[in-house]
Length: 537
Image (cartoon, rainbow, N blue to C red):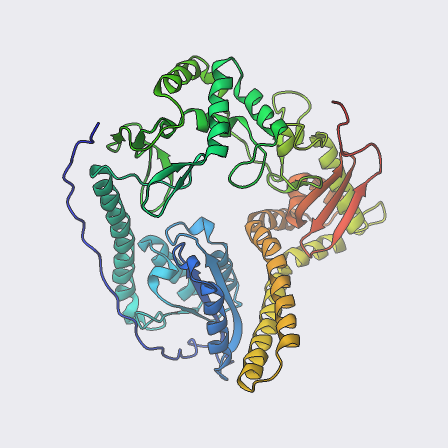
């Protein structure tokens, strides 16, 4: 069946902005000391393909700011592969703005308005807040400095252009996709059971195709999705990722994909809008395109239709409830397999947490479930040990200490990252100097690689820390409400409050946890009672 051809107009391409030369910022009005200068970098998903693109920008701005004797280096903030239209996901940008509004930064350098934000309202609101705090923003590409009040209208105009550019880019992609679909072309990523050769032809990968056929055969003989995934795990069948952690969702996706018959249905999902980038199921909002006999099938169309009929009768098997996130969501880790624990049993009196691998199959991980009450108890125990809280504790002094720790936590994290980057920069300079002089670089190279390894190791912790700003802010606000009376801290001692100090919990057993705190230290809480594993067969 050939798709119907629909004519769609070509969208405008937006505005081109030419790269301009760099210029030096003046000190903000009223500032007599050297201004503290920071920079913001962001690379798009496409730019991530360029090796070291973000790190090169960070090093460039670090060197540039430090080369100005009249400036004080205040850090380089960055986001990798984050959309400029979704502010909530840009943790680096949000940290930058918070620090600037808190009075830690006087000047911000950004390559362009489109790198800063692609939303007019957000751009103008942030610039207004920064201006009120006497913070300059320099947009290099457009040669704009917010200290110049006459540029406020121009910033608004260019921010509008940036938003329009993002909209046009989205519409151009949409237009190009529709044209490809109308010509009968198929836009496809990797599909288990097939590989695409250099001529863009689909070729069956037989070792994977046998697994696909087996899934259909088992389902047609009465196996459920969970039964099939357990069977695959037991047989050691590997996904493309190399993992064997099959679950019902993997099997359902395989059993409902018409491409295994040789046909292709295009445009199953679409992007809701250019701001959110959220993908939703296409239930008629966009035209769909069906291409018959596009490639050699693995499954007969008769078997595919028979499976769909059974699945339609058993829809409840694939339905999932809404997942409610809690303060500890994605922060409780299984020491056995490294996967996250998930919360379940909220409808009963005993809410539990269970390893996600164990949920899929005990063949993947035999870690026992944990009662939520036990997590709460051990967290409080760990917090009390960390701060030596007992009957003799002076709550007034403790509250002051906790507030100071939360208030300075982000500055400590910034300092740690900046120190490591300075170390890396020094190594790179020394290594380049040795190469120019034709000297041995082995020791310097090893030192550089060690620093890079430390940065990579810390990066995950920094990212987790940055996501927890809301928890730290909430706990800080709670502390401010206390008057310092005896046992005042006991009013706050729950998981939501303590969460502000926790990076993650590693479950050693249902009775023994390792807590990693925001300062990077670790503490073992609980007792050596029982084991991590369920030994029942």
